Length: 267
Image (tube, rainbow, N blue to C red; front, side, top):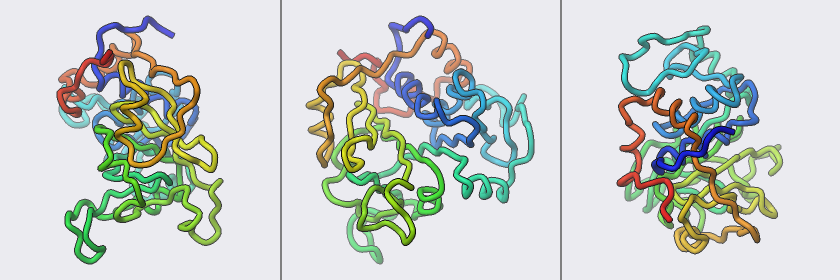
């Protein structure tokens, strides 16, 4: 288990909580999109799930995750084999991938939006990335969500302004799909960890980060969240985990990913 740390940041707490999403995956391609999700997947690969696969974000599969800071691109990289686009797509379509993505909106069904906000489809108020590969990814393999600022602009009351991914919405299921075919693992935010384990796949509170209350989660979520009778506290990082995180990010890029990056225990 290791020795629980007493001095850690919120970013480090979230990295460790995010790593847990990959614990029981076995040999799948772990894709963490963004600094903290990438570090979470890397931590999982270096500790409790060494079967995880990870690329260098270009064309090689790694036997050990690359640090995200502190050295030149590909310097000292431990490449295992070539992993070009064709092999990536074979991997995606086979379901042997787990991505942790950062949606701009999430609704109660777990449908996500990374594309556009407000207005109409033809003329949105804010244009973002476009749907990119999210529709195909969401129906092909497990996904988790990373939300650095938990608020009602992200967790919207109604459906997302533009639905980019499959969710637990029976009204939008593609032909031939059932709710059991959908695999959204966790939602990791700066307040808590959520999943879809409630009745009819309703969003459920899994753990509260130290110092955060149920009321804060409810107030900052635009839809109802299932609250268990007893809600555990998100475990603190261990000293051993912090040492690995520092090895992966010696220049502390992780601290710049959250507003003010407060202490991990905000009590």
